[in-house]
Length: 140
Image (cartoon, rainbow, N blue to C red; front, side):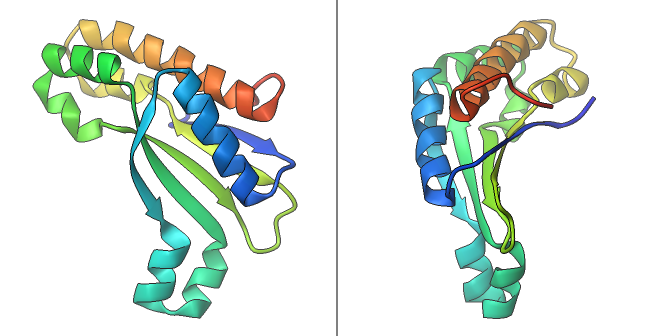
């Protein structure tokens, strides 16, 4: 099993970020946190380090209903929330990559039976969001 679902889109980075935000919202996810890895590397490590990573944004996406179900079933599962979604484009890339965590990872790490159904629901929603961003069948 892979730990992320991955698609590529022939869209500029900023457009892919916007498409991803809209697609996540359509699936009931809000973005609770945002980490601009490029800017952080530039600030902490210098311009050369930032250039090697290119554009790289981590969105901490959360569907409150799913998060509540998961936390009620296993309070420790909060360490794995929110669901991270990455939008990235390397310095010489011709396409933008969008990746979402595979929620099945939660099932492997928790022994609470309810986590499997929460993960399946989250997986379905994240895959639908990726499909919407891509505009076609998701590719793993």
